[in-house]
Image (cartoon, rainbow, N blue to C red; front, side, top):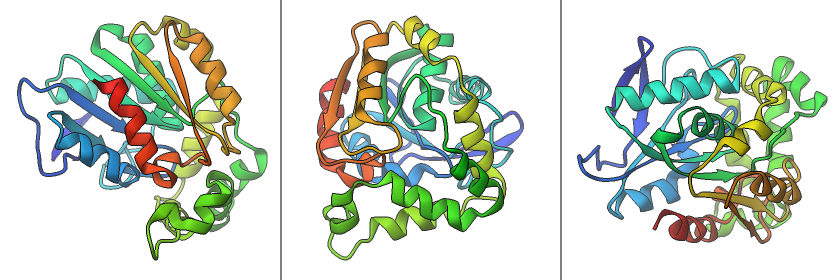
Length: 263
């Protein structure tokens, strides 16, 4: 499905289920340089479990028009305008990495519109390594290789996330490589400069789940646990043998963890 926000078309995967009035809605927010396809298993499963399950491409990503947001706060504002465009009073938000920061900032800004929050691979502060920032500006294939290397745990590199014949290393690399010029650098810069995490976490009042990968090198599990401590009543679940891209590496354990949160 497609809607317009700020005069630009937003592409949203609804998994052929659309937006049904009266159903609760889940919005799935992808990370830097990526698109909605990272949620293929989890978002589709929820679409067939009595939810409106919508996975948008952020502006400038995937099939969406416009420029990638310049900051996490700007992206959070865009997300709230997307809710307006969809005529949704409230939604549950699931975000990964940069998408988790956007969801956190939106929940802090408009607590009445976010009924629950799931944050994957997130921390209150997410500085980006200077090497990766430089590569994102000047060498997109190199940055994609670095993200695939740092973002996947050792088990997933060998097993393909349990899917025969699949290389998650190659899939992650190609996903980032096909991002539009400058988008990855803009995304990573937004993550690196985000300084509102602790204040935003303290302002969240909805049920919150933090999922951390036990083998995450980009956002170590201890940082996810610390984030959960900052949010009133939040729970942290550590996914064994998972790296930063846990929803691709360990799709079933991630879906199982989300099942209890969404109930």
